[in-house]
Image (tube, rainbow, N blue to C red):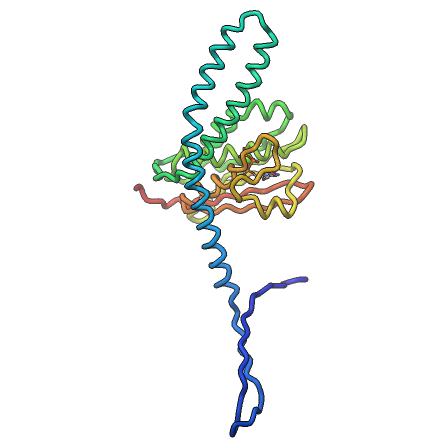
Length: 267
Ligand SMILES: Nc1ncnc2c1ncn2[C@@H]1O[C@H](COP(=O)(O)OP(=O)(O)OP(=O)(O)O)[C@@H](O)[C@H]1O
Ligand SMILES: [Mg+2]
């Protein structure tokens, strides 16, 4: 249905009397869509804050013992000499420990929003740096990276470390979704007082459910994912007063568009 909008309406009805005789009814309809949306958003934020607190505690409790387990395992691996089977088993446990470590550190950075350190950055080189980090993954799938960079972009005041976390997640997600010999387009351009960065892949895309739950912490469709990548990315972009837009079509691919204002003040 074109231009179809679903609204939530509250209705009130009262009788309309003349000389104590009911002459009719007065029906008042109030559009409460906006109010309801705000209430739901507030409820969601409260729930997330509560989850965040528990998650922070759990992450803290897990971190130290994990460090110890890893050290002891590495020791055992060194001491297992020629016993290849033992080495293999220890290697598998170490992989599991590394995965747990990744989850815990993502969890910590998710629940601990930090003060941004804004410095002048060149957004094209941030993307290049992140591309180097995922070079192996790109090579494995023989993915072509098409760059459409504007080179005379204004300087952006941003937190390099935080922004990298968002960009690397967009890249890894795009690579994971891409087919062998696929293509990922990355573009940067200035649009008024904003720098627009787009990550476009032609991979498997997302279905309705995935798209609607994309920013939900811990939502993942991957066996090795933590499901925190997009929630962290969204928060990083919003902390820079930017916007994040996602468009995706199942079987066709995904567009991630980030808009960052260039007139950020140093804090
Ligand atoms: N470019 C994309 N194409 C297709 N699906 C995507 C894309 N980006 C995200 N998704 C879907 O959204 C889900 C959530 O993404 P998110 O980055 O938050 O977590 P993840 O990649 O599963 O795990 P991680 O925490 O390691 O990033 C993914 O599991 C995937 O199903
Ligand atoms: Mg991810």
